[in-house]
Each structure stands twice: as structure tokens, then as C-alpha cells.
Image 1 (cartoon, helix red, strand yellow):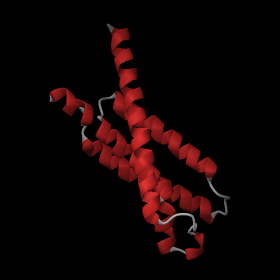
Image 2 (cartoon, helix red, strand yellow; image 1 turned 60 degrees about the vertical axis):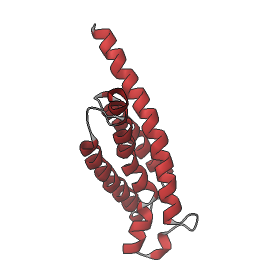
Image 3 (cartoon, helix red, strand yellow; image 1 turned 90 degrees about the horizontal axis):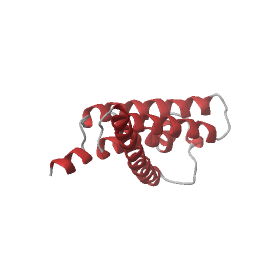
Image 4 (cartoon, one colour; image 1 turned 90 degrees about the vertical axis):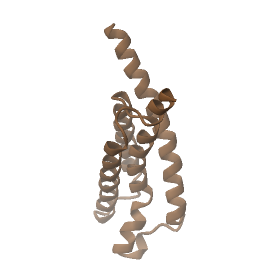
Amino acid sequence: MTSLNATLVGESGFERATVWCAVGFALTAAAFEAAARFGAPPTDWLLVICVSLTAVAAIAFARIGGGVGPTVLLAFGPFAGALVGPFVGALIGPFDTVPAVASPLESFGIAVLAATAAGVASYLIGRALASSERAALS
């Protein structure tokens, strides 16, 4: 049971991941809102940057001892900020910026799925890096 607990929760628990989830959400939503306000076209490049930074952060978090659950939670913030953030910004600003493609609930579901996939992959990569570092040191 201890091994399962270490895998799911890890040495670095949910506290750090929760903070970085909130920070990632805020920064990503602000970046998308700023890009929209400055008249940038649909921000595919911004999404690629946010996903890349999220993957690097999640891999680093898993490498230092984060479990699967906290790593998925860490990845959820930026994905939610990118997918749900424009809807939140539309509630404050003009309503014509909301794409008619998906509702906020559908975007939230996509963010959960994307964060789960990215978080699990990042966990596996991060733990593989940590074990290879330990093997190189011994």
C-alpha cells in the first residue's frame, strides 16, 4: 500500500501542485486575454507555448517526487486557463469574444482530459529522469 500511495501522492503532496495549478490558470488566462485585447489572431502559438511550459513544469515536479495525482493537478491549471479562461474573460468583457464552438462545460471536460494525459505522461518522464539520475550517481 505504501508503494501505491507514493505513486499516487508522491513525496511532494498536493499543496505545491495546488498553488501551481492556480498560478498556471491565472497566467494562462491572462496571456490569452492579453493576446485577444491586443488584436492577436487565434492564439495557436500561445497554446503551444503554454502546453510546452506546462509539460516542462510537470516533468520537473514529478522528477523531484510529485505523484501522479499532484502532477495531473499541476497540469490542469494552465489547460483550464487556456480552454475555460476565454469564457471567464467573456463574462467580464464583451460577449462577442466567446467562440461558439464549445460551451464552458465542454471546455472544462477537454481541460480535464488533456491535463490527465499530460500529467500521466509527465509523471512517467519525470520519474524515468529521476531514476536515471540515481543510477548515474551510484
